[in-house]
Amino acid sequence: MSTLDEELKHRSCTKLKSLLLGSCMALTAGCATGKQESFTFTADFPPNVTYEAVAKYAPAKGETCTVKKPNVGYNQRWHLDYKERYKPEHDIPIYRTSEGCQLVIYRVELEIYAAYGEDRGDFGADSAMVIIREQLEEQYKGAFDAAGESAINGQCQWLFRTIGPDRYITKLLDCKKVDDQSMVKKGRPVGAYTLDQLPGKTVRLKIKLADEERPAIGNTWLKFPNGWRRCMGKGMEDQYAFCRKNQKDFSEFIMPDGKQCSIYPNCTE
Image (tube, rainbow, N blue to C red):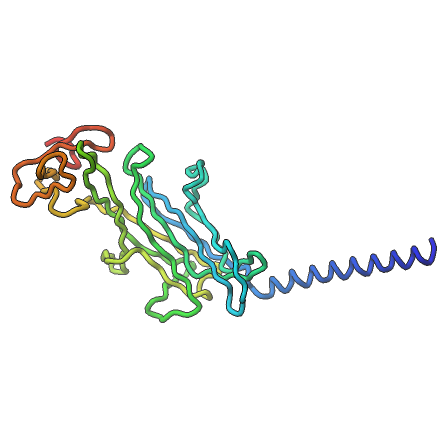
């Protein structure tokens, strides 16, 4: 081998070693920052209730970069095979890097979906949220038990109404937070945590369905011992059909399964 060949070989080996060393140092630095942490988000829901989540990220402190698509979606309903893809539990990164920018999570937005019929449009939805900050006052911080789990409790209730001249039943989903004394509050189910609380922990959204449904619009149904009756109003074309002073005339309506009924939810008296 010539002297020139030996020199070229030496330079190639030296360059390769430098590249490998640099890569190892970069990996070590990434691990040393502790920025690869995550927490587990999971849900305890009744049957036919699911959720869609979007984890929201912003540049970490000291970063001046911008990212076009900083967020990450979970259980996205636009997938045609949504039901097959659906998972109640996900590991959510606290820190992530996108487009060369170090990002930190600040919120998880949740959409709760519940089905009440077989048709594609027979569902209701409402929201919940996990708020994440660097610092929070103690009164707002969620607490974790000895197993490293924190629960966000909520209750969802079906609100029923009729639409169209044939008065088809449709339903809205109304979800509220439940406090530590099992009292239903006015706000949506929300939990708040600091960044240093979350690594390796589990946040569980626990939702129950209320035993009773109620009308979505007041003064449109009258309650009887065996169920609710729909006020006639000015006629079948009257979309609101308030009861007002007429509490004697009632209309039939059509349930999500196509059955014609006179009282809700039992259908017939």
